[in-house]
Amino acid sequence: MWQALHEELAPLGLSVVTVALDFDPAKARPWIDVAAPTHPSLIDSEHRVDELFGISNVPMAVWIDETGTLVRPAEGAAIQVSPLRSMEVPADLPERMRQVLTEMKNFPDTAEAYRAAIVDWANRGAESPYALTPEEVIERSQPRSADHSRAAACFELGHHLHLQGDHDAAVAWWKEAHALFPENWTYKRQAWTLESTPEGEDSDKAQEVQDVYGTSWSDEFLRLGGGAAYVIAPDL
Image (cartoon, rainbow, N blue to C red):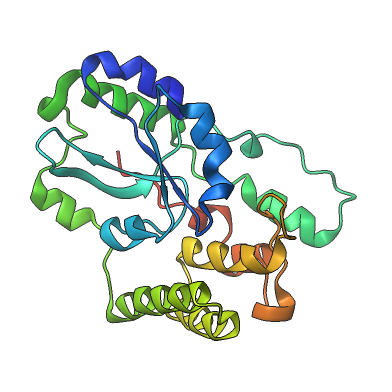
């Protein structure tokens, strides 16, 4: 999807760069290899884009012009309509699963408009109405409270301890990061996947981590507002 958009718009001078967020680069390597050599794809094993740009979930994106200036801040980035929006939710499913699937239908429907905005920017550059001024970028950027800053520090400290082999201490700091910034899904999912993914297997998506964190992806998804709150919808 993103590779195809990159190939479509590269002749106009626009590069679509995708960045995988994972402590373990090997988890993202298959997708990086498939994208090579035509699509620039990176692995951020330290979650620097979280800290620098305010990425709090995936997929999110920022727009950077040819001068290195940010022209759109971090926002939900989808260019294809999610099939989850139109799926049928069987009435005989277990109640919990039915609630989660029903809420997934409430993901913001901005894919077509967001893709059109990117294409417009590629064609018109600074003249595109979707390319914001620095003042507009600042105004639209997600606020970073003191708690959010502390959460970033806690998450980084947890990562350091994890690399040092002290996983229990890492979990304690990650729990603190989650409490300080509950809407940051990258902090949660990165920590949770270490508990819920069996050794040598692909990252677990359900992330049932009640034994360690007392919660799960579905618990948090519903608690924080479901589909409508899960994505920072782009203001187009």
